Image (cartoon, rainbow, N blue to C red):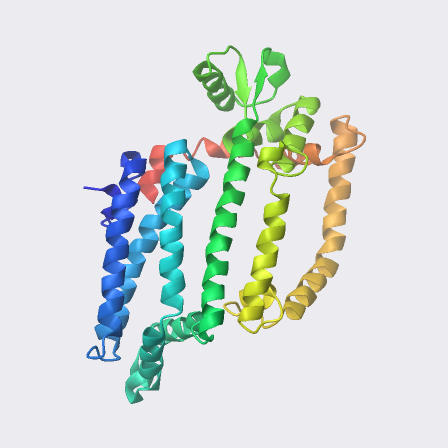
Length: 363
């Protein structure tokens, strides 16, 4: 059985292969379109069990399957997976864009909301219906035909640019590697991390230790390595990934500008002043001004405590670690040392109590 079509439990990532994607997505899209056709039919009553539940069930399966593909594309990409991901992304984007503009479904949800027995529905079901009505409006269901077409085109372009953005970031992350040939250059790094780095080097046919910008490799160096120069090298490489300071092929600068422009256009098409207003339509805050005021107030309240904590960290780094000018690549390292000195507590010690088998059993 195609693992993407198994919804009986947790995702079967171990059995996933790129060739599973297109057959599964095509089948699930066909199921979703069939569910849409049944839901929008004139003889389907505007009732929860008649059209909302079946439609949600079909869409939920598609979302789960595509979510697995998107996750693996983001964290474990390969040329084969990237090819099938980009081949199926337009189909997914078009389906959801068309769904958001389906006037027949929009009318049916409005009819359900207007029914006398709507008040008798449970609070969660009422919320789902209200959210669907909101999402139809945000999907362009109320736009005139010409603006609907442009809105759908914008959504497709946004999906493509966003996918390319993520690919550039992943490629930039994968492109970086440092091979260390002397153990003393990795003093302080925990043994389990060193073993993983050594295995990574062996996989590449090299001796020593391989350090990458992936978190299982990057974080132990930033948190434990006594080698300040190495921490700086990794930090600078990490924070400049896919930027104008990285390789031109990975530079996301133009993509960011394109994404912002398209988001702005989509917001204006929907009658909003900015994309921030679109984003807040589904959130608790009412306006961007309200959000900024909250953040400003939070900053004013938190800053004195943050400054006090940072002053303590700087003093500890100066007096105990010999770091006179605490930099960004020092803070994680110094914080770990301070925690151990002050509380006799280390992340590395805690990790020993959470081996993978025990964690999986507890899920």
